[in-house]
Length: 164
Image (cartoon, rainbow, N blue to C red; front, side):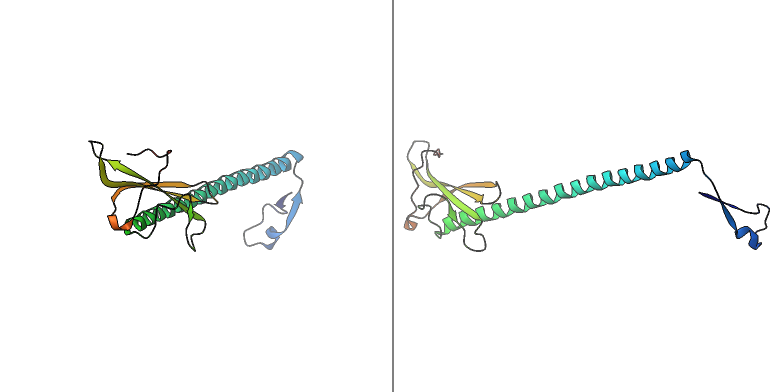
């Protein structure tokens, strides 16, 4: 309903101008207002859904990036442990990390390298494979290292791993 003053010729300071009387609106005007409200609500819901979807994708990407960085750090740690002689590549298969990294596993693949003449070079190609138990995440890090003879590291014979 639209309100209109009772006395249209009233002055600004006149109290009679404050008295209003309702007038009837046509049904088409009320229907168009309702349609505008419903359309505005639909646009708001659509915009909220798009923003929420974008925020969820951003959070998933952030989790994936955090896990990849963590896997790279664990791979570098496992490789450093091999170089220091703290981790033996003689253990076959996936080996779990200690607490608080129990959701991660490390697998070492060791292959000897050869010189151009075909003889042993004294270097080992060590590949560290890091896996997460809950997420489909695999991180590989390989490096050719010289291992001192007194550590007793010997390459694991694995036919699936090519010797470089």
